[in-house]
Length: 271
Image 1 (cartoon, rainbow, N blue to C red):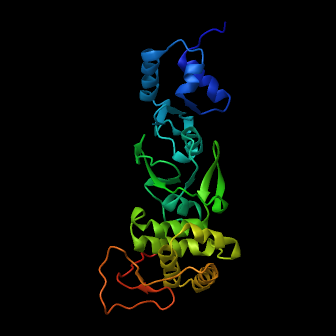
Image 2: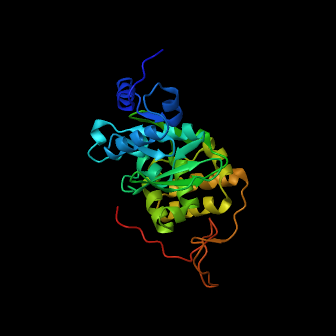
């Protein structure tokens, strides 16, 4: 029979093996001296001491030395392990992805993740605001893996990110914020035949608004390339407003190419 071990010693052993994430199931499988309520009390004490954190129920992160003063570990450290624990396909998206794809001025106070399956509740987890967006069909071809301290995490590529921020503009601060992001992401985007299938994951209005914004931020070459893809896919473009929640009047101008009604004045901060 193996000798039982204290929880704190078991955690030390995990870090020596380069493991920084564990679950309640891992604890139950270990030969620990504590169990039941005593184990819960031990976990609580270690959390209070800033040695571990629990960004999700029954999922724990051992806080590395470099983060102990803050007591908060960035989500990039554990997001891939958490999604595997939840058995969800995912990708880091929207503002979080934009900052990783070259939109250096788009630092967000939240960590945004797109997942499949049933909705996950967004909220503050150990000082980090995790925001989840649902998508049943994830365009894996347009997701890249970025190296992290503990492995890799899935991040939307620049083209997917651009379409997402337009389609989900309410979650990133509005259409003007989307225009700012598009202006920074545009140099990284490549709208060619390889991206034809990406358009199938988005509605025509989202693509129209992206094309309009590319023209608006004077990325004509990118706008032309996207327009060629739209024509190749046979998507039908109808008149739509640039801002869904704003009023529309009969005397408003309509963009000839993208069929966008100019019902809102887009304002971009100096970048």
